[in-house]
Every structure is written in C-alpha cells, then in structure tokens.
Amino acid sequence: MIEFRHVTKTFPQGRSTVTALDDIDLTIAENEMFGIVGESGSGKSTLLRLINHLEAPTSGAVRVDGEDLSALPARAQRERRRRIAMVFQQFNLLANSTVFDNVAMPLRLQGRRERDTVMQMLEFVKMAGHRDKHPSTLSGGEKQRVAIARALANRPRILLCDEPTSALDSGHTEEIMATLDEVRTQFHTTIVLVSHELDVIKSSCDRAAVLEQGRLAALTDVVAPPTRERTGSYADRAREYLA
Amino acid sequence: MNDLLARLADYRGEIITSIVETGYMIGNSVLAAILVGLPLGTLLYLSRPGGPYERRWLHSVLNTYVNVVRSVPFLLFVVALIPFTRWLVGTSFGTTAASVPLAFVAAALYARFSEQTLLDVPEQTVELARSLGANPVQLITRFLYSEARSGLVLSLTTVTISMVSYSTIMGVVGGGGVGDFAIRYGYQTYEYDLMYTTIALMIVVVMLIQGTGTLLARSIDKRAR
Ligand SMILES: Nc1ncnc2c1ncn2[C@@H]1O[C@H](COP(=O)(O)OP(=O)(O)OP(=O)(O)O)[C@@H](O)[C@H]1O
Ligand SMILES: [Mg+2]
Image 1: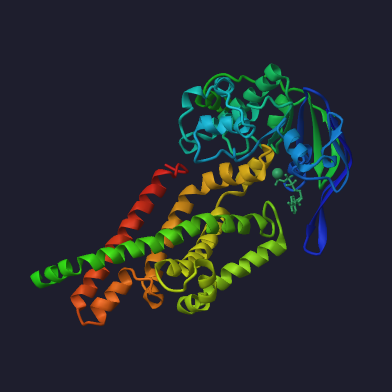
Image 2 (image 1 turned 120 degrees about the vertical axis):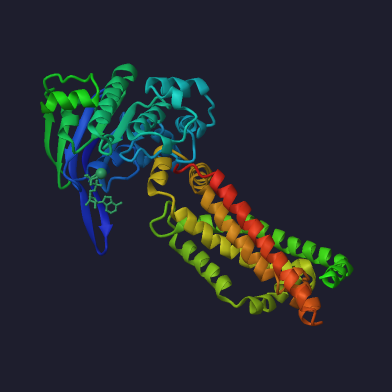
C-alpha cells in the first residue's frame, strides 16, 4: 500500500521556488493498477519519484507499506528502493551491456548471480532469444520489454512506470500494455502508471488521479473501454480502423 | 643515406636508451593519469553543482587545482616543482625525477578529460542507477565507467600523446628521452638528418598510439550500430 499524506514538494528555482506537488492526499491499494494523468509539468513524474524516494517530500509523508523512507538512513533507503522497480519513457538501458546483462544488473548489485531468474524474466517478456544483443540493435518496443524484464528481476512489490509507451508507436504501445497487465496478474505487482495518453490509462487502470498544476484535480474509478481487439498486426488494425 | 644508416648504427645504444627513457616517463605519467586523474575527474563529475553527490566546496577546490596545473607553462612548472620532486624521489635530476612533473600534468589533463567524458553520459543512466539502489561505488563502476568507456579510452589516448610531446623537453632536468636525443645529437651537432629521423620516429609512435586507442575505443563501443 502506498500512502500520500498532505504531501507538498517544492523545488528551488533561482530565488523563488516552484511547487511541483501541492497537498496531495492519496492511497494506492495492493495489486492495484493506478493511473496518473496530467499535462506536462503537472507533477506526475515528481509524484512517482516520491514513491521510491528519489525525491523527498518538502512536507507531509509518503509511506510504503506503512514505512516512511525519509526516516531511514541512506543505506536502508537503497535497500527499500530495490523492492520498487521503475520503467522509464526512454527505457534507460545500458547501451554497452547486452540484454542479458541489463536484466541481470539489479541482481548483480546485490551480489546475486541468478542466471535462471534472468532467463525466466526474459522468457516472460519474450526476449530470451535476444539475450546476447546490445540495446542499439532492438526496436523501441523490444527495448521497453527488456526494461520491464529488468524491473521484474528483483521481484518488486511495486512497479512505477513513467510514460512507458510515450516513445512507442501504437502497435508497440498495446504490446507493452499487455505485458504490464500480465505482470500484474502473474506477479501481483502494484503498478503506478504515469501517462498523458488517456487511452493507455483507460484500457488498463482501475483508478486514476488527475493532476493539475501540482494539485489533485480528480480521483476517479476508470471504466474499462469496450474490449478492443488486441490481436492482429498493425497493418490489419490500421486497415480495420481506417476503412 | 648509407651515411645516415651508418651513424644510426653508431648511435644505436643511445637511441635505444632514449626510447626506453621516453617509454619510462610516459608509462609513469599514464599510470598517474589512470590512478590519480581518473578518480579526480570522477570526483569533479560527482561533486559538481547539480551532480549526483553535490559538494560545492570540494568541487571548487579540485577544479581550481586542475586549472592551476594546466595553466602554468610546462617548463616553469617543471622548475617550480623541483623542491617537491627532490623531496619525493630524493633527486631533481634524471628520468625518475622528470616523471614527476609529467605525472602531475597527465593527472590534471585526464581529470578534466574524464570529467567531460562522464558529463556526456545521459542523465537517465544516473537516474537508473539510483532507482536500482546502486551505492556510490556501483554507480561509478557499473554505470558511469561502463557507459563512458570508449570516451575514457579515447581521452587517455590523447593524454598519452600529449605526454610524448611534453616528455621531449625533459632533457632540461636530465630526463633524457627521444626528444633530448634529437636535440643533443641532431640539433646541437648539426646532424639534422639524425634529428629529422628522430622526428619521423616520433610521428610513427604517435600514430601507433592513436591507432591503437581508436581501435580499442571502437571495439568496446556498443552504443550505436
Ligand atoms: N529537479 C527539479 N528541479 C527543479 N524543478 C523541478 C525538478 N523536477 C521537477 N521540477 C518542476 O516541477 C514541476 C513538475 O515536474 P514533473 O516533472 O513532475 O512534471 P510532469 O507532470 O512529469 O511533466 P512531463 O509530462 O513533462 O514529464 C515542473 O514545473 C518542473 O519544472
Ligand atoms: Mg514527467
């Protein structure tokens, strides 16, 4: 469970400050797929980064499973952060490392060499055949799948996704969203999904928060859209949609 | 031509000695670049304003140090450093003593180059390391150096080549080396062909160093292609 209690976050900017988040109150339940939408600069990424404590709140408290990371020493914070994985818009794969080494990284940082876990995660995202390639040879969708495999390697309780499909075309977007849906059902991961693409939120999330200039403008249940056909190639769907 | 070859044969001993001396001075300074310059550059990168471990005072102290070492004219630097050199290696004369100022310059140069190379690593790489709970050592070795490795090799190549050039004047403190040989036997005894031969030799050496560096950098760079 993730709780925001009167969370405000400001950043210094020159002599004044910018308020990125303003008095946010929010509870995200276990195994929920929670969406965060809002315009550029509305504070979506900041909200996400508060959850794994890459940023500390200026005031108020963020608690994960009842624990406030601000209260912990740096070492313990790093330790907790490993249970909260992150998926980025630009994938953030290490360009000089192979697919396998990228996925193995979270484990190696803890001195763990678990080949099987890595291969299992690569199987899960259907990238096992690409394990010896370097990221530059992969498509955007494939890169993001590798990034998801990496995020899962530590068996995280929480998966934070910051615009995971914004750099992808629509075919790859659906593929990634399908993968995230599967992550939730197979691993019971709580997923917090930031996106400005309403379609993406609508198709997968249970609830969503709407941010506006750092304030929580709305908190709403998401009604799933009429089930869309997720099969067929991009060309098939394009023809179907346009004709 | 035959005459030149004959004299080269005569000087064979001295030529080999001077090549060994140059190699020794450059080896020492490249070692200093790696063992001192790289950590210094890494600290500059980490401690910069807005960096992953911002320490403004540390950054400005290191930054000033690097600027000072790089801005003093080299010959003056060699002379100014004599008391320190004498304290460190017991003498201010000879090849080992000559290595000291070279090592200082190499470390400062490589500190600056490696800082700049690290600045080219995408900010997202640091963000990734933090989100994975990497500790500072892991951030440096497994993320920064890994992603910056080809740039680090290329800039070390540049430093090495600069040291070939700097080392030529170490004759002033009895450092010897190829440059000293060219001046003593080529220029001062009017054997210009000997001097030009030596210059040609150094050009070949520089090209070899550059070629090796470029090749190595390219083979470990997997970022695009
Ligand atoms: N490290 C920082 N330093 C200064 N200001 C920041 C920092 N991070 C965010 N901000 C500011 O806080 C506000 C919210 O930023 P945030 O990145 O959370 O927005 P966002 O909703 O993710 O936007 P986008 O859709 O463009 O990614 C913006 O005004 C931004 O300029
Ligand atoms: Mg953002």
